[in-house]
Length: 96
Image (cartoon, rainbow, N blue to C red; front, side, top):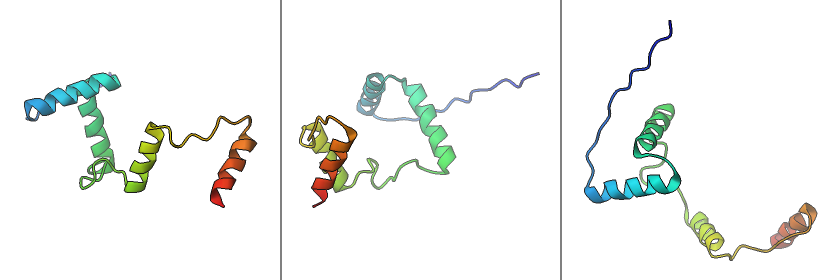
């Protein structure tokens, strides 16, 4: 006989604005607040602590943030390329 999984409730208190933003983001990315919390708890337990650096919760350094801004604003687009070889040659040109 299989053992039934027993779900244990977990709750926390946050401000109304934090909750509203959390629900909004969950809906935007296609999940539920409950599922997001389950994913966090699972990642926390697997890692044995926070699955991110609490001192830098976004985990991005200045170079990464600048690259993300370039991508968002189309400043990193060089192509399109006709082949992988042409793309790789373009990358080699950037190193010089």
